[in-house]
Length: 499
Image (cartoon, rainbow, N blue to C red; front, top):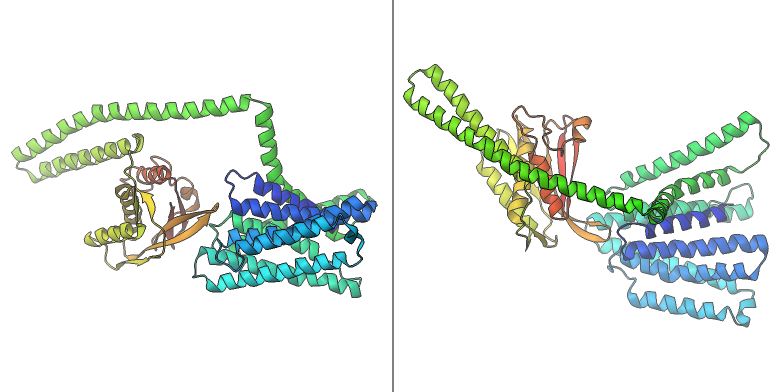
């Protein structure tokens, strides 16, 4: 049962990798590896059921396919910074093809053929693991090194659990766990390559733990139902939990597959998608037109009010009236500022993007901040990665985003604190991105407000317009990037800008 379950899990993960919207060589090679394992395990399972030569060929074909696709996957995962060169992958592919062709000769009946195939695959696994360890040692600290360490740790745990198969050979009471371990390892690697923004191992383990908790819950419900209805079914715990794992793994690819099927069968869905796009374009055009007219209609009276207040102030001698007129002038300027921000939000941005060094932009922002009147005990620090790649950005607009986020952080620390800037290179969907992190040690943001922080006109400030972060999000979106935020009340906030 575990063998069949591993075959199904491998197929499900392969489908999940192939059906992703953004495919890259890493996902494709990992899908090929999962398909090779699927062929191996399904061939092994059905050859024992039907005793058919066809299934033995399927089993050996999958086993021979594992070495070249495994080497290729690790090459793409390590971005060619490993002992696994293209020549090694080609050599493994040639060896596998030659042996596969030999299966259709009298060599097919050689009694030690399966042992030879196991030795070939085992030596490849050892070589690949050695290459991964070498790659980890040669890399500088960063997100890519963390990913490789995560994969290595997962392989070690799976290898330790697989020892139970050897122990089962001598002590039948010990259940074999190698297939369950490999299934869990494949899912773990799938999480690592599809969620590169999770830099720490414990965060990825938390996702895996959530899946395991769902599996365990489903297993317990199954036994509970059997107990309540007194059904005489005797299934091993391993088989039931693997069945639950299959269901959990298949949810996402099945959902994606059904979505595509329904979109293909019912063309009306496409019309609805196009209609939604037209509605959004219409909203944007209407907002732009309304903003221009609204700004004209409001700014002219504001200018008149401000001019009249300034004239009255020059003619008035009383201190009390001076204060009232100052309030009118100050609030008029504030309303004018609100209209300027509203125009910035509503009007489309014309970008003047150039290839630039992000570190220089960050350092310029820090220099500007230090010239402002910072609260006492406020410290601005930086931790910059000088190996980050150059990116195409509009320097002025990016400075506007960084200044806005930084000033918000300073306002959150009225009694002083630490404002930190950092830059690093991260991998996302096979694409290198530059990440800018801005952290403060201020009052933080509660969970409910955190969900609405980028919405237009949402603000927690007494005199805020609620458009600053909305504009920041639009600017970063126009650069093809994203901006995220993490916060904990009374401990601080961190904004992550990825381009």
